[in-house]
Amino acid sequence: MTKNNRSINRRHFLKLLGGGAAITSLAGCRVRSKESEQTSTGEVPTDKMSYRTNPKTGDRISILGYGTMRWPTVSKQVALESKEAIDQEAVNELIDYAIAHGVNYFDTSPVYGQGFSERATGMALKRHPRHSFFLATKLSNFAPETWSREASIAMYRNSFKELQVDYIDYMLLHAVGMGNGMKEFEARYIKNGVLDFLLQERQEGRIRHLGFSYHGDIKVFDYLLSKHDFYQWDFALIQMNYLDWKHAKEIEPLNTNAEYLYTALSKQQIPVMIMEPLLGGRLSKVPDHIVARLKQREPNRSVASWAFRFAASFPNVLTVLSGMTYMEHLQDNIRSYAPLQPLTDEEKQFLYQTAGLIVQYPTIPCNDCKYCMPCPYGIDIPTILLHYNKCVNQGEVPESQQAENYREARQAFLVGYDRSVPRLRQASHCIGCNQCTTHCPQGINIPQELRRIDRYVEQLKQGTL
Image (tube, rainbow, N blue to C red; front, side, top):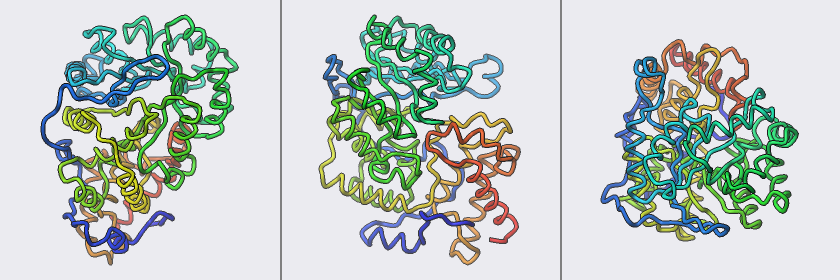
């Protein structure tokens, strides 16, 4: 298998961890149930949620924000019969529980949940007083056919219809910097007059706060901040976690270190919202030895809680978004923030050191956002990449037949791959059309990674590794 510059000998990796970290037994990289993911235990407080105050408007926002990209879904059969992909009853239950436990910020988009997230979120929130929550959505005009003024404004107006509201608390230009950088940003928002339209909507009160979410080309981010005096950005949504704080570009060259983004926004006194505090769940599914390292320090806290506390420990952060699909994840995050115990400087340094160890493991920086989907050839791109990452984290990607655990790891990888991804949706069917790459916020060369994984699978099957 072709190695990249992030690969590391497993024995050397264990030495880097030090003798103090207990070594846990390796589990196979098979599909695990959600119950197997580690969460903390104990009471879920109803009245201890931590809040941050928006300095511009006085909005008192829960430090835990609800991201709605990954709402629970119904079975394929039910979806075919009802033409609804999202489990509305489960969404209602999650939102009711979140509000009862102090969460009051909900973030959605026209493209989330196969296009159904806004509707499901609006239906659930409609059952609560409008003043009891803050609602964020986005102008997600990614596709060139939505770049016209008419199409973009139609998408904007449809958000009000789906969410069943007459004003949006926090409206975002979605994923600026993606694709062709400044050229694409100008096509989506400037040349068509859409940004001028949104500024007018803010002035008339249908938008209470106007901001942007950033991915990709740093030139776009720097440009937007250079125009802050004119646009008066009310907030910005950035990807920030303890791995991306200093190592974003090592993971993926197109990314920008979160330390730079946060510092630049803070200098301009632009409030910060955080997305991907767990890197699409990767920081809750770290290698077993990293789990041991974190658990040694905080045995009663979940692995994920370290990442959530990190993101919220910076004073200019208003809220940290988490896409909580399951009740146990919601409960665990509430425990982390009810109340928040900010990290000490020493604990931050501990996490920076931990990040240095994690970044040496050759995982693929997939956040499971599914922006690469659907693949025109039916390939299940996120599941393939996440299965590979899971096996790397669990030490079940042997480099050769001489590896100590070769036979067990080979079986675990191949059996888990077939169970995770149907044969017709596996990497071998990629033709390299490259349609997916332009949509990836992390800038992953997806066809290249799929070819690499497919070669590895064939080597395992043929015994030629």
